[in-house]
Structure formats: C-alpha cells, structure tokens
Length: 446
Image (cartoon, rainbow, N blue to C red):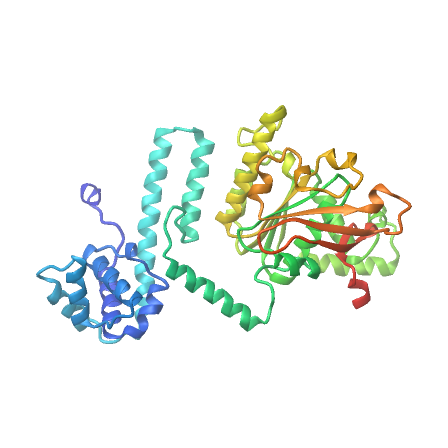
C-alpha cells in the first residue's frame, strides 16, 4: 500500500539500528529496552528479526555479543549471507549505549504513528462500508484509538515472564510504601482489610433494598478516593441529580445536617464550615454525569477521555439502558438485558483498568424471610450479575425493619462474594443526618 500511494509509513532506520547496536555492545541495557519496545515496533524486518533473537537470548540468560547473536540467528532460521556484515555495521555505527533509551523512544514513537495510520485506515474503511450504523462505528473507532493510548492490544497474548515482572514490581512497590492494600482505600478500614481495597479491573457490586443507603456509601467511597489518591473519579447517576449528589457530599464533608443545607438556615459558624468544605471538595478531581439515558457504551466512551482515572461509580444497574436504548423489557427478556449490561460493565472495568462500583437493587425476596439479611440470590434480575462481579456487598440495617431495636444506626455490610478473600460481615455506623457510612470507631478515634 505504501508503494502504491508513493508514501512510506513513518519509521527511523537509524534509531532502530542504534537500539540494536547498543543492545549488542552493552547487554546491561537490554532489560530497559525490553521494557519499552516489542518486536512489532521495528519497521525493517531485518531489525525485527535481530531484536527477536536478542529478546529470546536475554530470556534464557545467554551471553549476548555479535558472535553469539549471529549463531542464534542461524538457530532461529533468520540468518542470511549479509547478517554478519550487518551486525558488524550495527556495532560500528553505535559508539556508546548511553543514549539507548532516547533511540528506543524514537522507535516507539514511529511505531505509534504507524499504528495511528493503520487505525485511521480501518476507521475510514468502516465508515465507507457503513455496516452496523454510525453509533457502532464510532464506538469501534474510539476503542481503537483508546487501545493505542493505553498501549494495549486487547487480543494479544502476553508472555508469563512479562506478567511476572509486572506482579513483582507491584509487590516491590507495596513493600516500599508499607501499605497493606494493593488497591485504593474505601475509607472504611474494616472493609479494606477484607476486600484489599478497590483494585484495578474489579467490578464491585453494592446491593440493598431502596432507602438503605447504597448511594450514600458509594459517594463516601468516591469522595475518599478523590481526596486521598489524587486520581479522577467519575460518577454516573441515573437516579439523582448532580445538585442532589453535591448536597450530600457537602453535608458529609462539612458535617452539617443535610436537611439544614436544603433550607439554607445555617449559623455563621456553619456557613464558615460549609465554605471550607466546598473549597476542599472543589480541589478534588470528581466528575458527575446525571443523564438518565446512559448506556454502558456511553459511559465507557466518556471515561476513556478522562486523564488519570482512578474509579468509576454507577448508580444504579437496573436504570441503565441497553445498547438498543430501551429499558422496557418484560420478564426474562429484561433479565437477559441486565445480564448483558453487567457483562459489559466487567469488560469496561478491564478495558479502563480501574475499579468500577455499580449499585444494584435487591428484590423483595428477603422481605418474606424471617431473617431479612440479603442473599446473593436476592439480586434483582440477577442473571449473570453475581458471576461478573468480583465483589458483591449487601447493606442491611436492623432498624430499617424494626424501629424499636437497640441497634439504631448500626449497619451491616455483608460480603456475599469476594474473589480476593473470605466472606464476612462488617459493622458500620450509619449517620442519617449526613447520609454517610463510616467505620464504627471513627468518632472514638477523633
């Protein structure tokens, strides 16, 4: 295609040769280069063959120099009559390996430009064919560009050696930081201890009966993540308006009764606290979308454009529209739609590589039981929800059913599913005046 159009794809033969020459004359830099480049980043096939040869030799801890590389090229079947002369040329044109990462950056940039050109061609062809409709083509186009931005190939196989290096790096960082959590903290330390925080690519489901406070706990967690991680948090609210959510966040942060905030009848001291809370919240990277007609594809597309995304919160599952744009399905059809939506959310969590918290309604099944604590089977239109979710949390308050109970404002966070640990029940304090959940000992600590 390049020849037919009279134009060549972006590349730098000089940079590719300098990278290979550096790897041959100084094997100490090979590990660093392999961390940023892969064989497909090389434009010239001869350079790609040499890089793959060095890659395999490094993996097997073989000695790497011009003689051994040449011999391994024979073994791999990529040796030609000009190979010896070309390897010698690579060594001669590379005086030092000190600048190898600069050369590697050039090779990587050129590979990215070629990938962008390829993606552009694919998008152009899809648009001309027009199959699937404009919305589907736009979604496919955004996925292609997002995959390039994240430097990920969703269909590629990853060698276990590279995966192990990544795992080892994560463990090393954890050891250095002194933290016991591999994921983001929820702000509820008892819960963190059981689920090990909010981890990338996890789908976390928080379920309860209406009015139990699932929106409140999700907002508390979102606020804590935005405050402590310096990452962006995206909240999609299909039920409550942006202003209602902001009011709840203000109430929790300022510790002012939410009913007083709604009336605006505050003392001078409370106005000062409110101003301080508003100032603090404004500094957080917290974004809210209250469009009630969102699909998972819409949310996925919006999240791809967010820099430094750390967490996604969706309130709530049963209000989400299918890709077809309708929530009005009867019986088992709607169950299938909700199952498809939950599957798409898990895929979104993996694509974005961030934790996704989704809220869900529980059915009335627990109302007819003597013990009204939720079960996994109580998830409304459950279908495959419990299969797709990595963690399922259910909220239960005894005072919700028994107004005379001694356990006033004591909530149970029941871990119904946990891929990262055991199932358990954690007690939390419910503060209705601030619509907030918090650890039981929070006030004692303060």
